Image 1 (cartoon, rainbow, N blue to C red):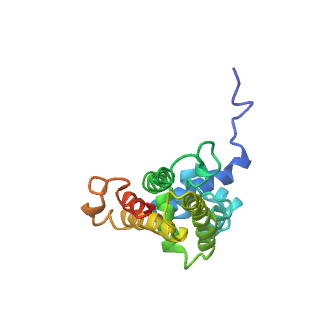
Image 2 (image 1 turned 120 degrees about the vertical axis):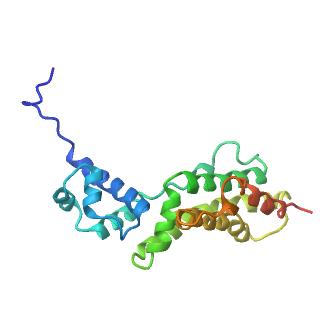
Image 3 (image 1 turned 90 degrees about the horizontal axis):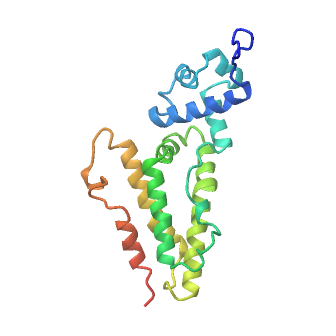
Length: 213
């Protein structure tokens, strides 16, 4: 048996920055950037405030590192790129899967809180805008556009602007997500709760409009 007095169990120092970033991410999402305190971040990561300052100069430094290292990226666009069998599947099914994966991610995971954080803090941290546009929206738009263009060429969809399809599918999900994370905790709205807004209902409305004559 190891004598811990002789061989003390120490946490690996190289793991601490990541632990601090995870703690900061979770608190920024839960409480908002302004309300999250350095002491809370350190405590959640299991280190002292002084240890936190060994790796990061401030909360702003933590947020900038979160953005730079893509700690917020939990959006499901990669799962629809180049997977075997996707070429042969009906475009309606693929677009439905993309939209419902986004819906699930924004409601059940960290990503929903990220949307709120981006939209509320972007004026103070312009790098959030770059993160949102280039690491989240652009890849998702590319997936949707690829599906729409392919299905239009084979006559499955009528001729339509892929960007219009992307906006119709994704933007309502973002708006619903923002309402749930920003408004619902204070004033619940039954109209957009899960019981009233069946998953995929607005998606089906959009897909019906894509049918070729």
